[in-house]
Amino acid sequence: MTTHWLAIDTATDLASVAVSTPDRIVTQSIGGARQHAAQIVPLIHEVLSTAHLSLEQIRGIVVGDGPGSFTGLRIGWAAAKGLIQQRRVPMLAIPSLVGAAHAARVNVVAACYDALRGQVFGAIYAFATDSLETLVAPELFTIAQLAAAFARPPDLAVGDGAERYRAEVLAWTGKEPLGLDALPPVAASLLTLARYDGAGRALDDAGVAEPVYGRPAEAQVKWEIRHGRPLPNSSR
Image 1 (cartoon, rainbow, N blue to C red):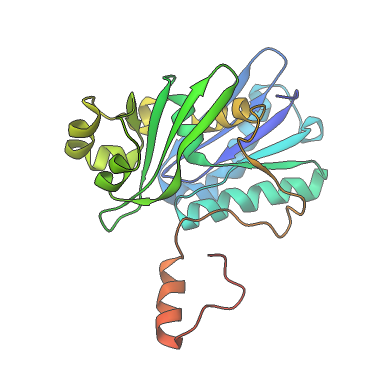
Image 2: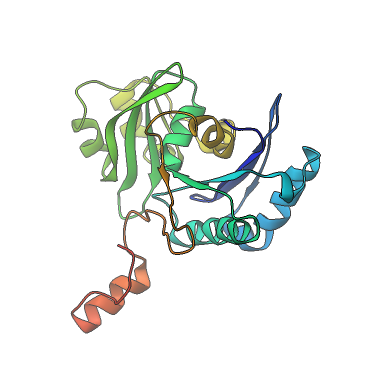
């Protein structure tokens, strides 16, 4: 990763920020989705202060691309876009699920975020030195559907969705799932993944770009049911 990039991840209840320096990655996390809006900017400044950096030294931004919490993603992306406007630096979006999987530090990982309604936002990745392979792309699944999407069990399953459906995950993988609080912060992994080919998508026009939410927001679903048509200018 190019020196002095900043990463922001707010796809779940556990938000994290990280910044790269020549010799280390400095990171901080905060739990509780209701804290994201009030705390994400102070968290960014805290990380920069710890790394002895200023915003003017940041050369690019990596943001968690979802799928995940609709509100959480909007908060993280709004913060990232604000920094992009100030600095006019590149912005790269990497799925938060691959960040969580990378943080597990094993070869084949299923990452599962709780999507409610008996489902998870799930994906399966395989890691080697400075490379990754997407074995099952991010999508909405039940645990049974995710297990059926790949021929063999992963080495580990991580995320709040894996925790919520612990019994099913344990029967599938034979190992206890790990929650995000048991892993290194996802934002730190996003910084590392930014140098992997194909890990993310460069945002040519970050000002109008949107994250991959995974499913429409509840308010959007209700509007479309009531009106019988897609919500104008919606991001699906």
